[in-house]
Amino acid sequence: MKVPFIGTIIMICFVLSILFCIISWIMAYKKSNKVIWSASCSLSFMSLTLLMEYRMLLEWINKADWAALADVSPSSFKMLCGYVILILLFNAYPISKTINKN
Image 1 (cartoon, rainbow, N blue to C red):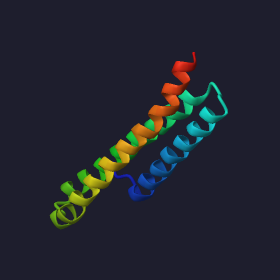
Image 2 (cartoon, rainbow, N blue to C red; image 1 turned 60 degrees about the vertical axis):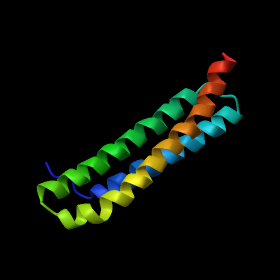
Image 3 (cartoon, helix red, strand yellow; image 1 turned 180 degrees about the horizontal axis):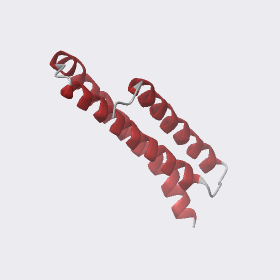
Image 4 (spheres, rainbow, N blue to C red; image 1 turned 90 degrees about the vertical axis):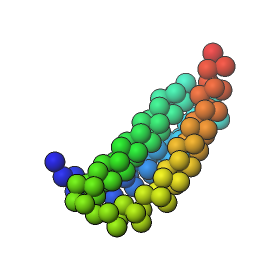
């Protein structure tokens, strides 16, 4: 099954994960109980971003588009590693603050 506009889906998931991460920081500042909910949404959209990126690479492999893989894979791996580390770290503080409060 071919997913149309996979690049658009990747960007939407990327933006939503960052948006929910910002919301979790705002809720932690306001001492809301919904911090865990927004942080888990952020982590869920992060995982969807990674899955969609993997899906895009699989489509290139199925089409035998080795030039695209050689051009994009090394730089996208570094970018995705930084993205995952930052999202995990930025969600860890509001979650730990909420858990320690209870």
